[in-house]
Image 1 (cartoon, rainbow, N blue to C red):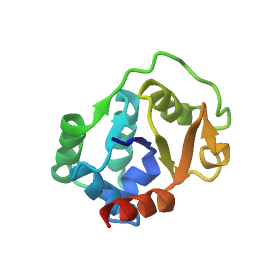
Image 2: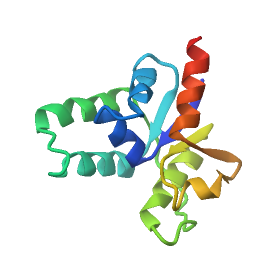
Image 3: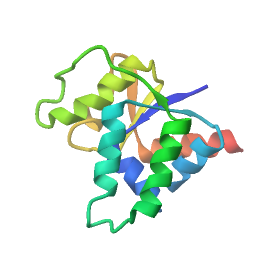
Image 4: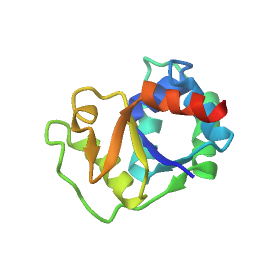
Length: 138
């Protein structure tokens, strides 16, 4: 089974019904394992609760509950300092290493995507992941 870490912008876009929406559908139907850490889950929650998104708790809380029920939580044992311009992005690399994932899915063109790989873990765009989901559905 494919294991992935999904960065915050991709996750929030999926929740908001954006381009990455099919990622949540693929996860719900068991097409991949969603790997995350407590720090990543907190980041998702904090971003979703920002006033600019206007999501009430009645929308955010079921999403978070599903994350805790169906996500695979890992506890990173290694503190990384690879992305110095935005150190919080290192949490995605830390979770990917701890969770032995196949891919990190990101929309971050400034920090994560330019790495292309980290410790042999490909860092792919939302579009690349959506294309993979389409291929496995066929």
